[in-house]
Amino acid sequence: MSGGAQENAMTEIALAMAMGFFSVMVLTAMSMGVSVPAAKSQPQRPDRAMISAVIADSGPARATGSVDKLTNKDVLVVFDGSRFFGRDLKPFDLATIDDTKRVVLAVTPDLSMAQAIEARRKIAASRLVITTLDGNWRRALQEKKNAL
Image (tube, rainbow, N blue to C red; front, side, top):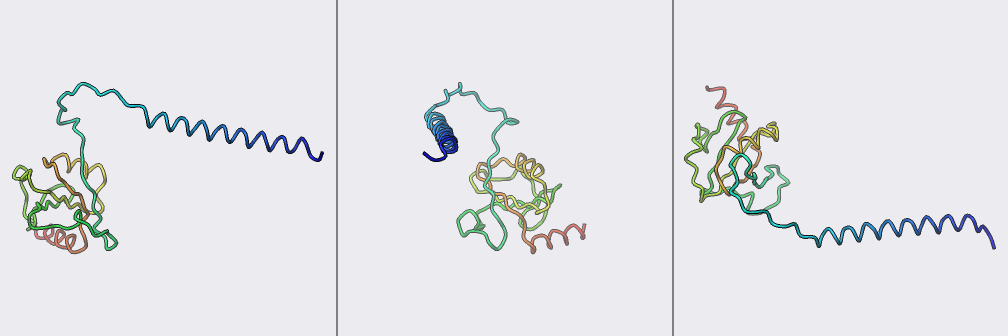
């Protein structure tokens, strides 16, 4: 018999690790099978409504998909951090948005997440895509600001 104490220590460590992995597996299986009881359906208040939007990348490496493609049927809203503009970079009234159309909210890349969420809250649209403005749009927006 050679090195009995050392082999026992390694065996005990392996056994402890196996027990730990088994415990994690059992906990994972149990958590996936547990259903949460449904709460009574109450109408959500607008201030606590869940905010949903799809984030689209405006960079050159974006994936090709229907989320990225802006069509003439979509409502384009440009947000510079303080004001909303339409496709023509004229001030845009959010009350005129047609809820049946998809709304594309284009924001400046330096806009914080909190500001983007606040802008999203102001738009009453069920289908919304948030994207960042590319270089051409940013230059046009800057020219518009300089002209004002």
